[in-house]
Image (cartoon, rainbow, N blue to C red):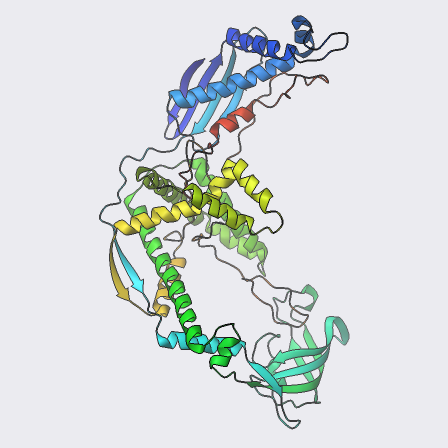
Length: 541
């Protein structure tokens, strides 16, 4: 195999490879001898078909298979000989016609992962914002639970409803004098002041008594989720069946037993543990972002453009999807276009930090054990009742999917390692201060809101869509929910880089083809660039 470098520019590499005609012919002969032992043909016993007849019938297909294998071996030899770590799937192009008896040339193009000579992780200094879960916070949590357990009781007939009371009503609404779809109902419960109905509706029920009849006049919001009702004035005929007043739940041991807890003290202890865990998670999120900001400020190296483009495309797809759900999609998309460069920089930051975290993990022998991997697969399988065995088998047989599943845990381990090395000073703050600090970072494009990916082991970008870590500063837009006809609009809350197709070998798929089908010569190249199952060192956020 003749290999010559034709481009070495930054992280881009291109090579010209030539398969000698004799080497290709030898591969064809070897494949012919193998197939001749098993091929069946009318008039001949199995294994007794003359080789020249097999060559005449299936020569082109056999040559295609041989060429495929030769290209695959050539790419593997190239990667090994030049010690290349592809950042993306190598692009393979056959050069010219594939003529029998002639050498075959092809070009391989790729971007490689950068070599990180100087990784600066010493002298890390971080501030840890600490919030104590005091008795006041626990009591407030108890009160919120009590509010959720709040029941109501029927008021006296002469009682006039006020904010916080619940009315049971029948209603019939009309727009332009016509009853509209979804505008009629019976026995609907409405809590005054809840904001669950369109603005102004609940306010006009204040003072109502049981058996009252009222006319409520409102206008649908301009951004209402039913097009023909947007901005329309409406009139509702209301009949109040009953007025119910809230009854405060007694906060005692009996209250705790409603949650399956023996006593109020035990319930408070559980809530305290939950608050501690929640506050600990917020503290770690803040520290992690500051850590990544520090790493980003210390390292500036070239990153593969294909990886940046792939990352940007994923960010942009999310943003575009949210813009499509905006009240004015065209305006939302126009705003996004003005920020395209910012999000491109965010994508580059993600890739750079991902590569850096991966390098740190590998240098410090950070791994995910098989026991931990089995636990991850078990947790994922539990999400699909009745299909657990299929899910487990899928991850066992799909190295890329397993890498995506492994990536978040591996990345957490790298972050924990770095946090353990850092000099940490603590500062006591309120929960509001901590949440405000995180929110301030949310509003700074690219400063700490990353979704880093590394996951490289002589292969491409690994990406887990459900990784559950910090996400890009996507400016979420309110999505109109499927509310009742007059309810208030509600806000709802990688894989391989494609390989450029190479020119297909001239291999006919005969009806009585050899034992394996002829496939595109790009396929084995794609396989060559994929991570092997043993590649456990992955990072992704």
